Image (spheres, helix red, strand yellow):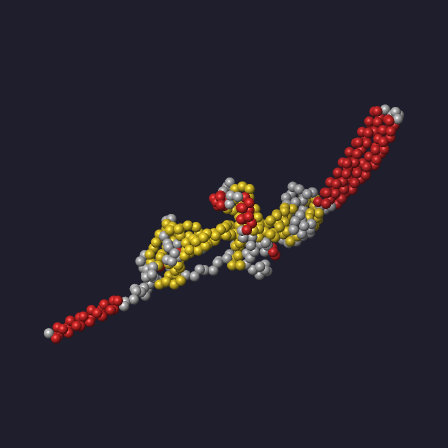
Length: 390
C-alpha cells in the first residue's frame, strides 16, 4: 500500500514538472541551418519622383566656318582643338587677286566720278541756256539724260568698290563666336570657295547643351499636370537637373531647362528638349553621352520597399514577408510607381511589416530565417572632380 502511494506521488511530481517545463518554454528558435537574410521594415514616406533620360551633349551654338570667296589658302592661323575668341583669324586666303580687283574697281569709280562731274556741269549749263531760249528742248533733254546716266555709272562703280572691299575682307576668315575650334578640313595650298564645304566648326560649350528626348505619353502627362503656360514656365525654371556621365560619375554642376522643340518626332514619337550645364574649364565636349535626371515632384505618404525586395513572375509581383516568429510568407502585391531604387506598393503590404531585401532566393514559403537589418547602398553616381586635370 505504501509502495502504491509512493508511485502516485512520483507520477504527480513528474506531471507537474512537465507542465512547468512546457509553461516556461521559450518561443521556437530557428534551426541552426536557417538561412540569413537582410530585411527592412515597410513604411510610408515622402519620396521624390525622379525622371532619368539619356542625353547627348552638344554646343549651345555650332558655327560652321565656310569660305565666302574662291581662292587658295596661304595660312591657318589657329590651333586645332583650341579655344578661340570672336574675331580671331582662322584662315587666310591669298588676297592678291582681290586687291587687284579692288584697285580696278576704284579706278573705274574715279573715271565714273570724272564723267559725272562733266555731265553735271553740262546739265547745269543746258538748263540755263534753255531758260534763256538759247538751245532747244531736245538739246536740254540730251544733257539731262547724259548727267543721269553718268550718276548711275558712278553708283554702279561705288557698288563695285564695296563688293571688291567685301571680297578682300572675306580673304581673312575669322571666328564669329567665342568657342572651341575643331580640326581643319582644308590645308594650306587648297583651293576653297563657297561650294567646297566647311573649313572647320566652332562650338560654344560654356554653357554646354544636353539634348534629351521624352516620349509622347510623358509629354502629354506633363502638359495635363501643368495646363497653364505661365505656371508651366515657372515650374520649368525651378527644376534642377543632374548629369551622370558615361563612367557613372556625377557632374558637379547643376543644369537648368533651356527649351523644348516645336514638334514631336514622327519616327520616334518623342519630343526633344534641351538642358544647359555650366562647363568651366571646357571639361565636357559635344558628342558625349550621359544621363540627365531631375525630381519632377514629391509624392506624399507612399508605401515603398526597395526594388530588390520585389520579384516579378510572369507579370505578377510578390515579396517575402517575415513574421514575428521569423517565418517567411510569400505574398503577392500590387506595385505602383518607381522612385529611384524604391518601388511603391499599392496593395498587399501594411506599414510595420518586414520584407526580405536580400536572400529571397534562399527561402521558401513557411521557412525559418535568421534576419539582419538591411542598409541602403550608397548612390552609384559619385561627384566628378571639378579640376579637369585630375
